[in-house]
Length: 149
Image (cartoon, rainbow, N blue to C red; front, side):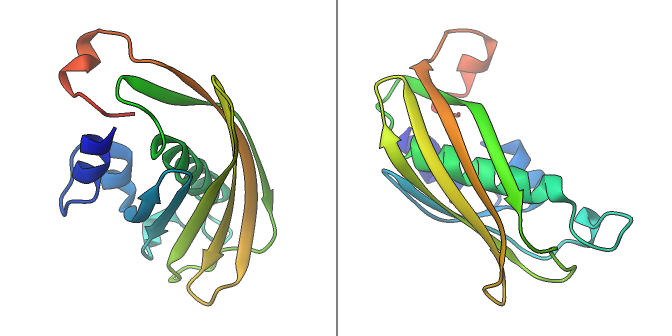
């Protein structure tokens, strides 16, 4: 996983197409903690004039997953089993978003994590919790890109 995390933090990274598409930047990933940043992006605003809730949920889920990934041994991957998001305030257009996640319990096959999403003023927008399955990587066509989640 270390080579994936190192590649993910490089400018113009291509190991995580979702991050590249949304513009997500990795600020910090260690064993059990992750912080992701999403710069302002007018394309993520829904018809009501605020950032879509699904964007906040995605950012929280990815932050939690990367907090889990930070502690995985080589050859293991993770997948979200369950994710619960509580939206507390609308995300205004033009504000950068930041998701901070921590692992709260690491089991052998299931890891539990929590995240908070804030805006550039530090206003709490959402809280999330999730559980993540840890499993061995299966060989297959996607194995051509080693160490990707």
